[in-house]
Length: 328
Image (cartoon, rainbow, N blue to C red):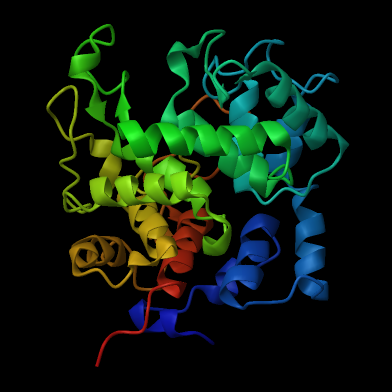
């Protein structure tokens, strides 16, 4: 092993992650763990192999020629086979933009973006311009090469303005969606939004983006992420927090919460230590993490629950690789 993240591990999973059977994980391991430059031949070959790997071909094989999946609407339903979810999954897989992906991205921009709201919506109206959806789509579209597209830029700024001013209260995290006074701040939504804004270099973040990040970080650190007793419309802690998985969709887990906070420079915050330990305790004797949750009704499969998962292990190692050096 070649980086300080190895100190956290019970074994060496890197050779396993670098195997050819999962080009996506191989690509991320070369890029994020071994720090290969963009023109590295092995990195370029792994990126190319992603496009012929089964997850990507399964997803693109179900796409209509016009760029959508299932039906030509706003693309949110049904979960997790409609259009917006495929954009998220393809980004998660490290897919390289090609004609099919470009058609998909353009379809989402043309059908899911509401100009009057300046945001993406899960319906034809502005009632469901959810933080989680917008955060996920911003991250995915930026990852797939659409970060400078005017509608993406508009959504990034409008979402930042709204969350910086109003916080992350969500109608879906409430006892009554019709009563705004029952809407609770959604930690999952905050994680998705912060994940998108973490892609923006600090020097390029607008005042609103910086404000949104501050509000989101404050929410996530207002509770112990390892306990995850965040405000809830049901008054209960969602058990999904504690099941590490791939892909996540609108759900989140302790690992994603830690990862986004670490990428935003909060890895040394002592309030994060219990959550880091929670993640570390999930690994096996070979330094691998299991797949404890995966989405159902997708176009492809991402592994067997309960088995060691290259996807989850890669997620964990990416987080560990960005932790600051411990204070001496």
